[in-house]
Length: 355
Image 1 (cartoon, rainbow, N blue to C red):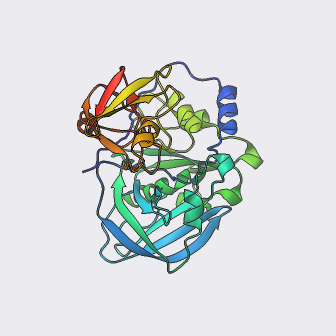
Image 2 (cartoon, helix red, strand yellow; image 1 turned 135 degrees about the vertical axis):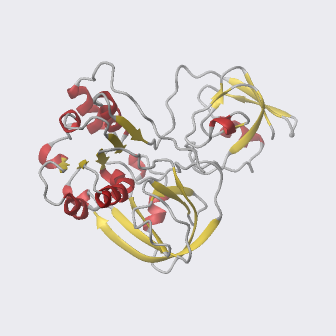
Image 3 (spheres, one colour; image 1 turned 90 degrees about the vertical axis):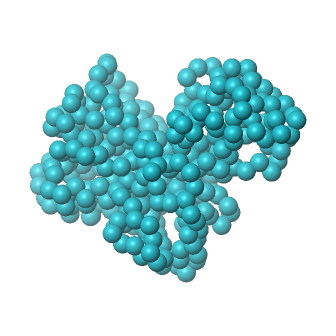
């Protein structure tokens, strides 16, 4: 089974200043969260499926939902994602937001992200998929599973509602207590808002919707102040929002989230060398470069896709040297012998790859 990349944190440490947090969230180019474009899946590669786009519909400003149909599709659980192989060859991953019991279709939703917001064309390709088109998919995989807990608190930012929506349905069906804080730029930009409110059943305090143009940014501290002891807090949203939740997490609660950007550097970048053993070459990786860029300068056919440490296309076997792993894909066992060369680096002065 795929390794679960779920972070469970105990509350503690100094709280970040609320004004600073608000400024950071508002300034983040990921608010509202871009479509979950970058692969964030577990180990290995699944068997590829070819599915037909049966429905393409707009579900919010800048957001489209695709229904992909096939037969006897692998089952999935809330929090799972699907790899889409787009017409250009790009591999992107999107949260499944339909019915896990439906073995005849998968449903995903994505927000259109422009280049000025950090988009690299994946979301535009998805928005351009027309009904009747055939698309290759891999998965599903799950690295953001619904935790087993006596009660739940969910925090979603923008398109981050997509993996949480099936969780809400499942928890509601189970009868477990839950609450949701859902924020976005405007109500019109927030997908599945009507269904989310309906799931809340009109119960006071169960669903809190915060549109920035109406009420500013969500008050995470106030929301989590009402979390019960032992509650599982699931978060999907921009990095500053996730940090804000972690900073005010009540004692006795667990935090479950996933990342959609590479891990931050732990210090100043250093240059190093990479020996390509089978090719008999050695390349220099500058402090401002990546192993992938350096390798492709010598071996231009080296495969890659996301360049963010999520999809695994650029995975290479490591023969010697210590790796500074910054991916969101490999298990600990896999990291002992391999690396994703698009984001990971050397901890020392030299690595040897089986290339």
